Image 1: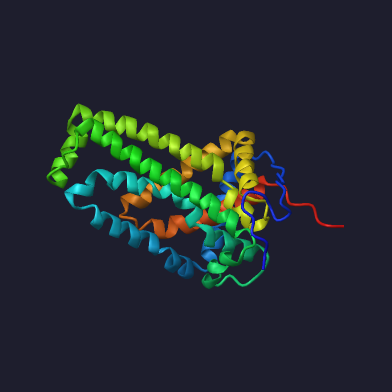
Image 2: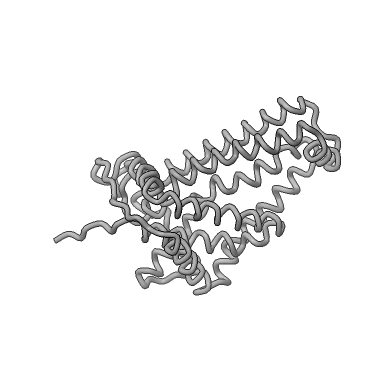
Length: 269
């Protein structure tokens, strides 16, 4: 049985992989390679990722009551905060395809056997904490602007948001605060999960390497974050149906972005 370790790697030390500088062209190359992975067996990936559109529709139905309406947008946008963890199986498929291994969709669940699974869970818990914090902040913002009284209907809620000064302040402040949360997640996890699947370096080193990669490549990483946000927005506007394609493509592309940024581990002599 693999040794249980979380913060440090398998040798109980923090090993910080080297990172390369990449360009904008590398970001688009990673997207093309992610699309190529997706087209390898698209029916399997769409089937696997239908859980996201289904979850989205359930979410809309759950929040359709007036009491939960103010949380609809925060919950939808919160997908982006937990997305890096939710795409673990897709990184695994891309990893296996790169090694010329079987890429049947069932192998997406092989991540549970990874020796780095405690570290992966630790970083996932970090994302969950950020997600919960975002929901609480969004709820507090709404309460401060509109009070404890819930909207009587969807129409009333939409009027509050788009036709009142408080609604405008909520849109501006909410998006600004959400942007901060999104930047924190992007900087700390842009390559953390693929790195942990590939090399058991520990949770701290994985997060630190993501931050290091962001500081070394601010423009490409910012472009990557913009692309992710844009595709998720389109997915939301298509009632989550678009996510059945965008999520797997972005997941596979994240693996290839990681491979372009992180220098491979030296092979043993």
